[in-house]
Image 1: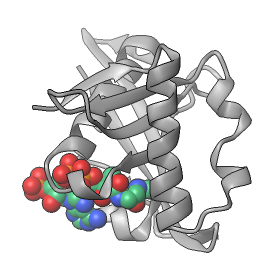
Image 2: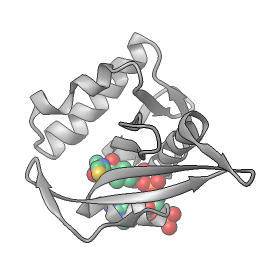
Image 3: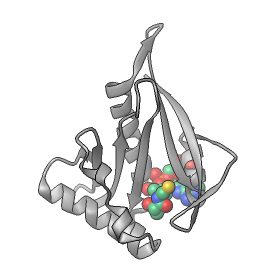
Image 4: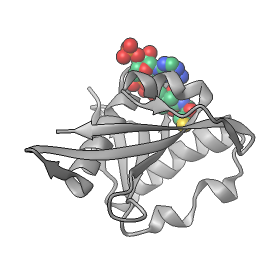
Length: 157
Ligand SMILES: CC(C)(COP(=O)(O)OP(=O)(O)OC[C@H]1O[C@@H](n2cnc3c(N)ncnc32)[C@H](O)[C@@H]1OP(=O)(O)O)[C@@H](O)C(=O)NCCC(=O)NCCS
């Protein structure tokens, strides 16, 4: 079973960093100087870590607060270790951060709590996000030499 927790101590943070370096830097050739950025230390950023029952770290992702009230929250740095892919870890990370976004930034209208979540999806991962209900904009752009498209989802309680 996969357990998803907020990153709160040094050991969890080290595990999160190790996964991101392995996935984005080693595997995808992202510049290490850009992979860890100032937003990682922003007090409004929430990081989550997925682990197996035996404590093995399996994946991580982060939630950025909206720039302004009413703007979408942003999920990024979604990474699952190569050995753990296809087992539902990525989906579990996304659900945990969508719940977090809803609780922290959601607005209640007609008894329904709602929040918009956006992300910058690598095109190779777009199918993963679309399965979870994200709708991609048509424009594509290069970031770190990888094609991306923005996608958005309205998350409700
Ligand atoms: C993309 C990634 C996070 C997906 O995580 P995962 O744990 O393998 O995904 P899950 O097992 O939770 O998959 C959930 C569903 O999405 C599907 N899926 C997973 N990756 C997919 C992909 N790249 N394209 C299309 N569908 C995908 C799965 O088949 C599954 O479908 P199902 O619900 O019908 O069974 C993972 O492959 C990864 O870390 N890749 C490298 C880093 C990366 O590209 N991150 C995204 C940056 S934008």
